[in-house]
Image (cartoon, rainbow, N blue to C red; front, side, top):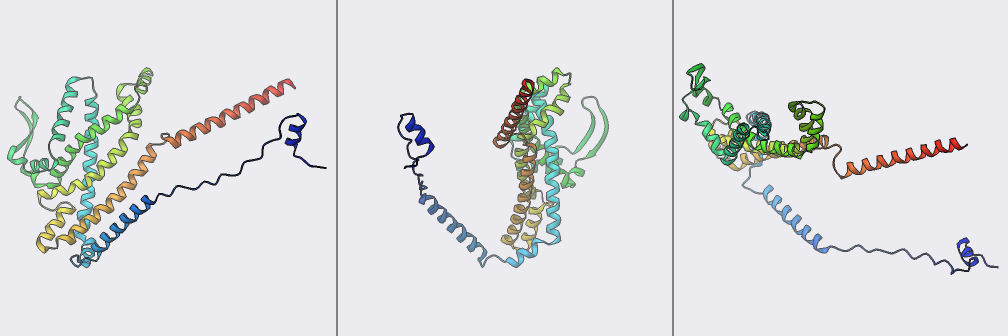
Length: 330
């Protein structure tokens, strides 16, 4: 008496051939990438050797580095650097948004003025612009507030009052320059929004300003935030160019004045670099959080999750409809 499986019995009874045996499991052997591991080992070895030689260098006075790292004058300059970064970015982002709207306007005068502004500030180095604002008194000895070509003057003041406050010069130089770059970033974000969104909002009776503020800009933030975050990080480092004005109003300028007197150049440059790296890392983390917040609902993972939710809803609808049809027949 022989025992056979149901499948084999069924096949034999039907007169067909016996069922084929299950194939053996394929044993896959991964490809060895020896070149990748070798190149990675060489790079790691060189990086470790470079770091070790830097730390063990007899020309670096590490006690001096740690001494100046947390000195009150260094921390005050660092705080002013961070304040300058955010104030100039607010000025730049606000001006850039206005310029982007003007650039996209159907009014040719507004569009042309915005284009000329962007062309000028993007076409001249920011270093030159800082020096120009620092010497604005040579060009204009007095500033007037009034109506041009009419002789009406409401107020006036010497340009020396502006130049004497280097913080104002710094905000004007960096903020107006950043507005030109931010305008193109905002314009790219606005263009990325589907035109049908604006058309649908307009068909509901929304004004163009309301459409821009409530429909276009919130969706454009998904494109604007990553690039604007990079601009903020770049602005933090651009503040070091303000050292050309003197006065030591920011981190690098303050440390530059110190090492010009103590000749501890390398040590204080290490202090400046360390603080720039620390603040840049914090800004990078903040940028990642903002990208995640404004990027909700976009991307491959979000699309796959939405498709799965839609599939589950379709299955529940199908099951409920079958249940209702079965209840009707009974």
